[in-house]
Length: 448
Image (tube, rainbow, N blue to C red):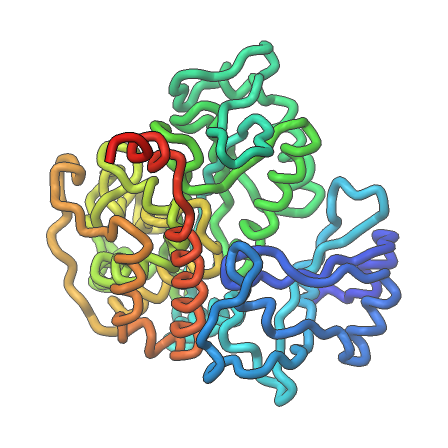
């Protein structure tokens, strides 16, 4: 049942509302309004925002040379999704978060908005009587405050008064070092109604992972989107930073956003990835084939930043190719051991820095193409995939070259999104390549 916004705001004694839209990078943008103004604006359709918020680069600029697609910047009408409204923790004034969709003046949704694109992909599944189910796992680092970008990040001091300096995967005592932060994250997530499950200590120093309960892809994209904000806010309240960069510290493992996924029949709820006798179904194998074939081609959707590709290194707990295997964590696509009701594939390619909407879109769309085209996957591999040739792009530049020519995905998502997303990423890449790094100054200044 859809929530009544006015009733909910009254019951929770909300004074202010943050009306949020995810931009193309997954950054939260929007407006803050007094609760009464928010309700009246929703009622009369005057809640608006410039459409250019969807094409911001990560450094807050706009790409050049897209005038033929985005030649003007008219206001878009914001329509909040009532089911996303939540109490916003950590504010002195009672505040709520709500995620909004953006519409053009003709009533159509903005066709490059990440949330609208995910709904479009879910509609493709629904037309065939399918419903995808996902469960994200998101990793992040806690680091000491860093106000000078020329200095490397370092692990924060824990409750013992010391900083971690070694890998502690699944370390319980290492988790206890940050018990106050972890408890605060759980409390805020509970207040917001985010369906998080377990938290573990990952391989890096002060690196944590949170697992989300499986469910609807749109709802979980919303939850991951808001979860990042919660974690960063909680960390700051405890005097540290939280970062979802794919690889924030040299020599340490990167942070991923693994996505477990399956597909069920809408009418019966039966998992379509398994046969009645518990074997892998033909649809399951075709889904995997779509992932193997197309995910490497659209890497910028799940590895969107120059830093993303530092994570994908041999023997780094991140994949370097698109192989698949049974319970094999060196592969890009892992099939966990499970019964037929829980048959699924884990997509291990996306980084924690990815826009959750676009990473989920990429995964679901590649699997969808595999199923509709009845693709056949290569044989699953045994042994370490790190012993196989690298098939994933090494840089954002190489990834963008592949992305621009992936016609199968482009035809389903639309030319506007492909061209604008490419322009945003190309602009960011140009700016990055214009910076002279400390490594260059260190090794080239007096030697070349």
